[in-house]
Image 1 (cartoon, rainbow, N blue to C red):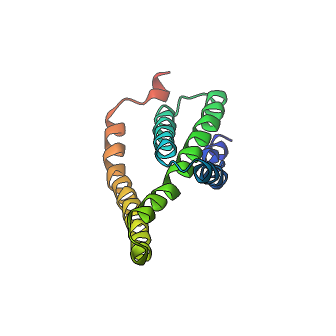
Image 2: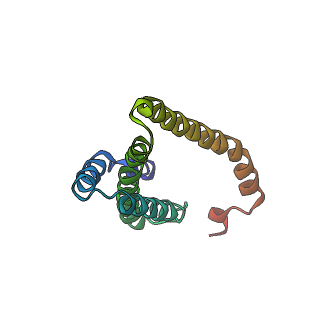
Image 3: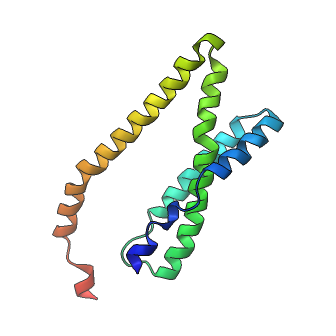
Length: 139
């Protein structure tokens, strides 16, 4: 049962938040408040995810995942597409395609480096967790 609840922080998706943020940006004409707010929400959401471990109760985990999922969804929706908009506004019209593809390339490159880092750090995490006494046995 616990494993079935774990993937659900990703359930609130970023698309509705992106659409709402896009409409608000179109009305106000200001980008920076949305990007800063999105970055703060992303930081708070991932900090909340960092507090969950194997001893966390299911009730707390469900509430935290709802808040964290919404925070991360709002943060992603308010930042990712708006970074492309900032880049497109900063370059001449003839260079918009190259600028947009460069943003996409570096976003993909960052994701690849993040996955590589996670794969390389997993053996280190396993080794350090094996060195520590088992929490479940001592309880």
